[in-house]
Length: 280
Image 1: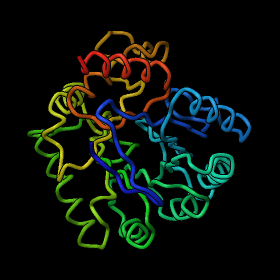
Image 2: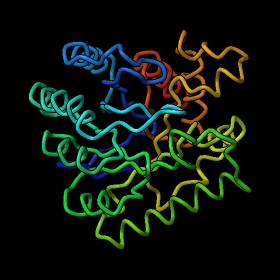
Image 3: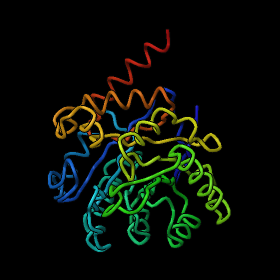
């Protein structure tokens, strides 16, 4: 069983897999933009995700879909911090994550009670590394080629698995050199962030080759466009959770420890069935 050091605790990650529920409080995210962009709607949805079995809630106030423009930090903070503060008050033991690339937003989220910083830039900012070195929290280090506005414009790798692994090794070493314990890190290959369909499939299939120092790996496959491309129906990942659940099971078999999804209940059921099957 792998472990992950968070703000006030060490999380035990079962082989069956843990679920991170997505709470986007944005007007323009790819599949759920505008659905939960008011505090009441966001909090209601958060309660549903908790009831469905999410171990972690990942709260984001900036869309990072392909082609998205950057959101200013004040707007992002105004969307996310009140939600984090209220959830921390209502659920003292709930694990909360802030999905942000901005150090100032991350700092405010930690002040409000967040346990994890989910950084899509993979600690590329010196200010983010400095914050993480001084504030105890879990950190998700994601790989992305380019930046959201341009990342899907002809992404290219000589060997995507080797290059993503090399990125993780470099980031873990950099974090440790700047005073961040590797025990606080979780690795995310960044499915759909500067990758083609083939790149995504190769990373899922060879997930264990990406692991550094036995750190936990998070897979964010929920409603990703590449599944629609494979099924020749761009909208199907949004209409039904079946593609996400299926790919997440493949990822679980390949070694994923945490699954970041919109549809928590169907994946929880699928992981429970997988666990029962594997126990025989």
